[in-house]
Length: 406
Image (cartoon, rainbow, N blue to C red):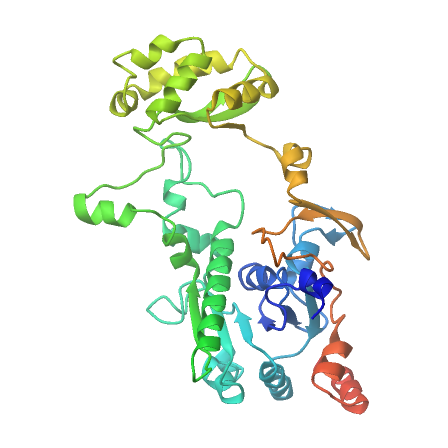
C-alpha cells in the first residue's frame, strides 16, 4: 500500500453495514459508522422511503435540510421487506454484510423472517444492532417507544426545566441520539470481539432508548436507593455548587461562568475587582458558597451586566475563569473555533447546491473520517448494489423493479 493510500484510509473501510430503519436512532447509528469509512447500504421502502426525507424545521425548495446530513456517505436502495422475495433479497444482502442495524418495534423483523436467528443462519459472522424503545425483552417490549417516551421513562425529562414549571424537553432528539451512539459503540465492540475470537461469530446488540437515557443519569438511582434523595428540576443552577450559572450581559446576551472551585472563584473575584469576596465567610469555601448561592449569583450578575458579551469573555479567559456565551446557531456559524476545527463543512448537494453541515466527531490523527457525499435520492444505488454487489443479471433486476420488489 502506498503512503498516499495509507493517508486516505479510513478506520472502517472494508466494513459493510446494512441499515433497516427510519427516522433517527437507527439511521444516526449507521451515519456514525459511515463517517469513518463503513460502506452503509440503507434499505428503504419503494416509492415512499424514509419519512426523514421530508423532516426538518426548515426546508429549501420543499426539500429537507436534515436528510442530506442524516444519510451522508450512505448508499440508498429500495426493497419491499413485506414480500417473501424481498425478504430473500434482504438475506442476500446480509450474506455480504458485517453489521445490520434496525430500529423497528420488537417482533417486526421476526415477522419478516429477518430476526437475528434467521440472519445468523445465512451469515454466522453478522453483528445485529437492534434499537427500540424498551428493548427486545421485558414487559414493555411491545410498547411503541419513540425517543420522547424514552427520555421520559429514562428520567431526563423530569429533571429538565425549572422547579415551578412542568418538565420540558432538551431542544434536540437526545434520546434517539444517545441510543444511536450506544448502538455504534456496541457494534464496534462486537466487531473487535468477532475479529479476535477463534469462532469468528457475530452477536446481536439490544439497545433500548430509555436505557440509553438512564445510562447518563449519573448517580441519581444510587442516591435515591441509598439515602432517598430525589433529583428535581433546578433550572440553570446546580444546587449547592456556586458560582456556576448563566449571567446576563449588557447587550442582552448570556454568559455561562463556572467558577465553583475555590482557586477559580478567587480568580473570578479578582477580575471582578472584588477580591475581598473570596475571603468573605459567606463565600470563602464550597459549602459557604452553596448556602449563599442566590446572593452570590446576584453579585456576579450585577457585574456581568456592565459588559457586552464580546468584551466579557476575553476578560474571563485571560483570568483563567471558564466562561462562554450561550450560542445561538448564528453564533456557531460565525465562530472561528468551529471553523478552524472543521466542525462546519461546506459540501455540494446535487439538488440543494452548497450546504454547510456538521463536521465529524471525533477527530482521529491517523485515520480521520470524511464526508464523501450527502444523502442520496430514493433508490439511487439500486443498480450498483443489486447488479454489482449481488450479481443479479439484467433480466432479474428489471423484473424486480417492474414488480415493485425494489
